[in-house]
Length: 134
Image (cartoon, rainbow, N blue to C red; front, side, top):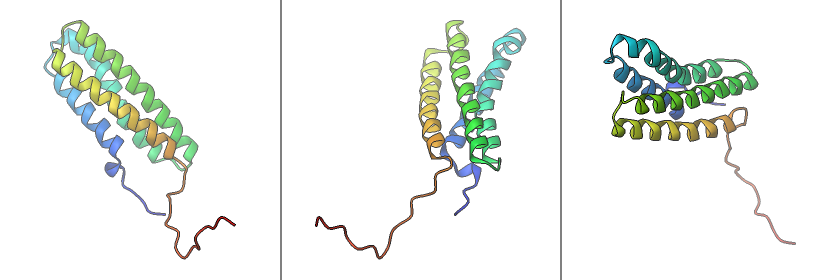
């Protein structure tokens, strides 16, 4: 079985990028906004990739899957903080739409990733006779 480094897993890379993007937004807010919504928003988005990574480092597939479920919870929490930031006029509509789309795509990719955990990779079958309809 081959080993894939965590930084080559697409959903992990996407989650890392989302966390960095949210950090870049929140860092410019004033103290009150950072202290209330900002910290929660950053923690939630950073938690997506952190939980994927922690699960990836676990020995057993069930543990990996559980941490991915936590990541999915953080992803949904991130959507909530994004909506609050938009409704409170902390971010523009274009930024809201872009981040919401990224979180939605990440959500789909995370669900697909969860389905693959613990399953062996598909191997090519060689020298297998063709099936007949006898």
